[in-house]
Length: 269
Image (cartoon, rainbow, N blue to C red; front, side, top):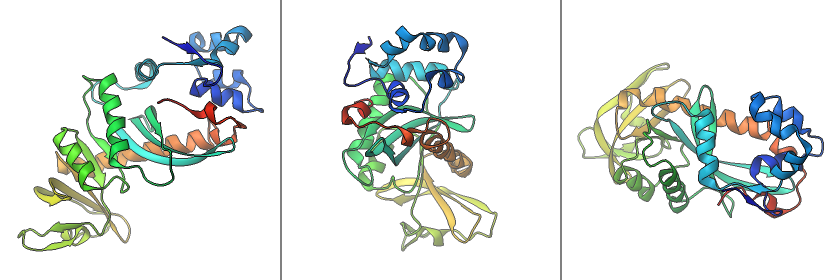
């Protein structure tokens, strides 16, 4: 059930309240009429400014409104921005859908820099608790999401994934007798894509590799299934970057909020 709290309003309402130049009805123009009408009533809008919704309720609601049917293709990524007067570091899990990722769950990181395995695992466990039966096509991640323990968790947890790896990542050659930078495994001309159908050991786990070259350096990804479609799947990760752009300055304008109370951006825990 929703809980009323004057100190920790729900995230969308915090955004609305924090923008002194924001009008609530402007946001409602982007919502279906039956959803927007309650927000246009002064008494109801005041109520929503003081409500904290349970994480599972909000995640289920967002998924029911925006998530596609069938398998989901989520992206995990981290971003930094100014929220009011505060610098925040957030780890997101979002569903890719029609050119824009939809944020389902996220974690405020109490530090600067990259997330660690513990923080990522905790986020996925929350997802599985709320959506235990939901099928996943692939979990897409960029080069920040590297590491032996993290990859071990994904493999042993049967999470379908596709991760771009740094170009200096060492992998065995085809004879399994020498380690080479992953970019030397592939011989690509500009515009070519290649997948290796025999798994290689990367960060202690047997995974498949695929690569594509558009510029001077190839883009190399690792996955645990269907390497021939790994590159095309990974390219869908750009949708979470579009989501970040919309949140920061091309829609939600979160960086324009004027919040000064640290409790107001305690989104979900």
